[in-house]
Length: 143
Image 1 (tube, rainbow, N blue to C red):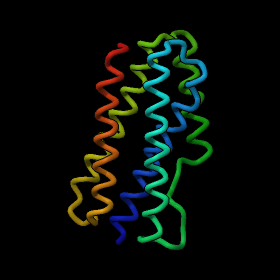
Image 2: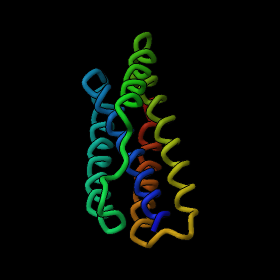
Image 3: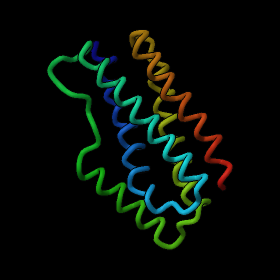
């Protein structure tokens, strides 16, 4: 049970981080094609967050899934602002999101290797990783 809760918490944090990061920069993305890719990725994160919220109570009725805390969110936002202050090109934005998406893939793959998680949690993790891998391919086009 604990492995399932941990996996869902980590999955939720990753999806929240992706959603928040895209939200921070989306209004400032000038390239229309990149903006559409990021907007679609944002919708995917929101869809996955909804699935996590529905599945989480089956493993832990007492709490909500863990999210990134306020300090982490501020650090991510400031970090993105600093990195994009000098260069806010589509290539630079794509590079930053590729790095973040790859981090999510790595963490997701690590969680998928845990043989103690239930099939439903495994399926959701697999969906998350596959979605992110698809977006890596889309983001590469903007480098």
